[in-house]
Length: 243
Length: 243
DNA sequence: TCATGGGATTTAGCATACAGTCGCCGAGAT
DNA sequence: ATCTCGGCGACTGTATGCTAAATCCCATGA
Image (tube, rainbow over all chains, first blue to last red; front, side):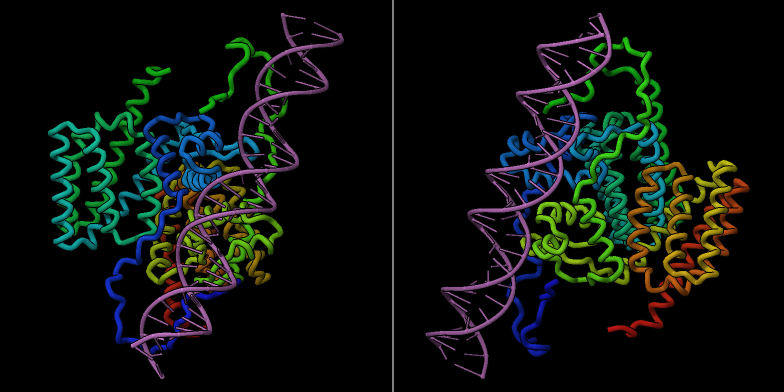
C-alpha cells in the first residue's frame, strides 16, 4: 500500500513562514453521498418514507438528479446507522422498528445519556454552565411560544452540549447514533412531553453546576426514563389510532 | 416510491397453510462488500494495515480480485464503524487512535458491558447459565494450553453470549461496535491479562446464576475496568518500546 | 376454483469508463 | 541558491453499461 502520509520536504528546518490564514483545515468539496444521506435520512425521519417501504436506487437517483453510485454509498451508511435494512439482491427497505426495539433503544439511550450527564458534572467549567443556562433559556422561549420545531431543536442542542461536556467522544458518537433514531420514534409524542421536560432540565443543569455528578446522572436517568414511559403510555392509548 | 411491501393476494382469508420450514429468512448470496469489509477489517486488526496508512481503492480491488465498487462500499462501512477516516478527494486512511480515544473507548465499553451483565443476570435461564459455564470451560482450557488465539476467541464468545442474554439488541450492536475496536487496541496486551481475567469471569457467572443483577453489573464493571488499567500500565511502561 | 409452471419485467450487484482534483516535481525566474 | 509557477501523474468522485437474480403476471392443467 502506498504510504505518502505527509512526507515533509525539508526535515525540521522551516519554521519561519506561517501558512497565511489557514486555521481551518480548509473546506473540502462535500461528496454527493453526504448530501444524499442527509436527504434520505430526513425523509425517513419526517415520515415521507414509511417503515417497510422499498427504496429503489434508480428512483432515488433520478429524484435527486445524481447517478446510482452516490445513492448506493449513502444507503450503505444508512444501513450502518440502522435506518434501513439491506436485503441481498432485494435492496433497501426502511427499517420497521418493533415494539421491543423501541424500548431497548430508549433503555440504551437512558444508560448513555445518564453517563454523559455524570461526566459533564465532573468536567463542566463555569463558562460552560453559563452556556447551558442560555440553551435552557432558548428552550423556555420555545415552550412559551409553543413552537414545536424550536422545542425539538433546543432539546437536541442542550443534550448535545451536555454530551460534549462529558468529554468522551466515543460516548458522544454512540449517543448521536441512538438519539437520532429515538427522535424518529419519539416524534409523535414530542408535544405532550415538551413542557414538563424543561423543568427537569433546569434541575439537571443545577446539579451539573454544583458538580454533583451522582445527582446529575440520576436526574438524567429519570428524565430519559420518563420519556420512555410517555412513549409507552402513548403506545397503549393510541394503539390502533392510525391505519 | 414503489411500495410492494407484501401485498397479500387474498385479503385475510388464508390462515390454514403455514409456510413449511422457512423459519430462517433463507440464506441469500452474500454480497462481495461483506467479504471485502471483513478482509480489510481483519487486515487492520492484525496490523497488516497500519494506522495512518493510505488505502488505495485500486490496489485493494486488484488485490482482492474485485472491482472498485464493492471496495468503496466496504470503505463506507469501515468509516461508519470508526476503522478508517475518509478524507474527501484524498481517500481512506486507517484511523489513528489517540491516547484519549482509547481511554474513552474503554470507558464506554465498561459502561455498556456492565449494563449487559446486569440485564443478563435478570433474564438468564438455568439452561443459559449452563451454557455460560461451558463457555467458561473452553476458556479455561485455552488458558492452560496457553493458546492465545483460543483465549481471545473464548473471551469474545463469552462476552457475546452475556450480551445476548441481556436481551437488548440495540445494546448488543453498540457493544459489538465498541468491543471490536477495543480488541484492536487491546491486542498487544491480551497475553498479560488473559489468565487472571478468567477467574473474574467465573465469579461473574456465579452472580448471574444467582440472579444478582447488581453484583453482576458491578463485577463486570470491575472486570473491564481492570482491562483498562492494564492498558494504561502497559502504556506507560512500553511507551517507546516500538518504532 | 385452485395450484403450477414459464416467461417477461424489474432491480440489485458488479464492472468499467470518464472527469475533476490534489499533490508532487522540475524548469525557469528572482 | 531559493522561490514560484506550470505541467504531469495518481487517485478519488461520478456516471453508465452489463449481467444475473428475484418477483410478478398470466396461461395452462388438475
